[in-house]
Length: 539
Image (tube, rainbow, N blue to C red; front, side, top):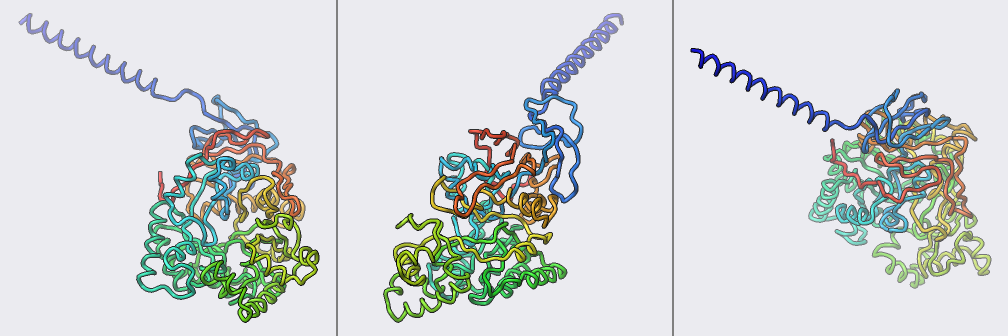
C-alpha cells in the first residue's frame, strides 16, 4: 500500500514538472518569436490626407515591412523616423497612363527618378492598345534590374491584333477573333489589370466596336477594366461625342469599368464640347454604367506626326506601305488632301512642335512652321518629306483651358501623365514626363484654384485604385501597402517646360515604395523597391 502511494506521488510530481517545463518552453518561444517593440519606420507630425477626399488630420503612421500597421498615436520607437511637421502625407500617386515600359527595362533609367520626384509610386504601362503582348516576358524583363516604382500591366488590343492579323484593314475571322480572345485571356491570367485600346491608331482603328466589346468581355471575366485612346478626339472620323459613346458602349456590353484615357477636346472644331461629353458620361453613370476618364494637366498633347496628319487608310500594311503610297502621285494627292484637313484640326503648323526626330535632331523643339519657313516651302510638303525620312514625334497645342478645367473638376476623372521615361537631354519631349503631378497641384489647386487639394489627391490615389482594383494601395489606412508621398504644396514646382523639358520637379520631400524610403529629400535610394504587380494577387 505504501509503495503504491509513493508511486502515485512520484508520478504526479513528474507530471507537474513536465507540464511546467512545457509551459516555460512555450512562453520562451512566444517571447522570442515576437517582433521587437519597434517599427521599421514611423512618420510623425504630418497632416495625413488619406486619399478618400476627406480633409487632412494629424496622425502618425507606423510601417512594418511593406505595410502600414497603424495610423494614429504611435508610442513605440522605430528604426527610421520621418518628421513630417508642416508637410502633407498622402498615398503614393498612381499614374494610370504611361509609356514608361521601355525606360523601366533600361538599367540607367529603371530607378524611375522623374516619377519618384513627382510622388508617383505606381505606373500603368501598355496603354493605347500598344505594348507587350506577353505579360510574363515583360514582367521578367522589368525585374531583371529591378524597378524604382510599382508597375501595373495592361493587355494591349492593337499589339494583339497586329500579332494575329498584321496591319490589315478588315474584320477578323472567327478563328482570328478566338486567337485574340486567347491572347487577352493569357494576359489577364499573367497579371494584367485590363484591356487597353487605341482605335485612333492603326491597326486598332481597323477594329469595329463589336470586336472591342468581345475582347473586353474577356478582361471583364477577370475583373479587369477597359481603357481607350478613343477613336476620335476631334472630328477626324466619327467625332468626339460618338467616340466617347463607344467607350460607354464597351463598358456597358462587356460589363466592366470603361476609361476615356487622356480625355480632351482636340482642336478648334470641338472646343467647348467638354460640356456635352460630361453630360453624356453623367447620364451613363446614372444608368449604372461604370465610366471614368483620366487626364493630364496641360493644353498640349503628344503623338506622332503620322498619327496626327496621315489618314488611317494610308497606313494599312505599315510604314513601308505608307512610303510606297507617298511615292505614287495619285495616292499622294489623296493623302495630302486629308493631311491638309487634319492640320487645320490641329490648329495649323505653328501649333505642332517636334519632340524627337532621329534623322535630324536639329528640328527638335521647333514648330512645323519654323522648319517649313527655313526650307522655304509649305508646311504640308515639309511634313511629307519628314514622314518619308522617318516618323517624327510631336507636341500638339490643341486644347483650351475651359475644356481642361471642366474635365478636371469631375469626380470620375483620374490624373495621368501619358509620359515616357527617357534619358536626360534626349529629344525635346512633352514636359508631362517630368511635371504632371506637381503641376496639377501647383497650377490648378494653388494658383488657379480650379479644384481643391483633396480633390486632386483623390484623383491621384484612391480613385485609380478603385477603378483598377488596386485593393491594397492608394489609401492611408491600416493594412494598406506603404506607398507614401510627403510634400509641402507651397514648394511644389514643375520645372519642365515645352522648350526645356528635361528638368526634375521639386517639392516632394519623401517617397516610400513598399515601405522602403525611395526618396529622402534630395537623396535617391540606390535600392529599387518597386514590384510588377499581379492583378489576381489577393492577400
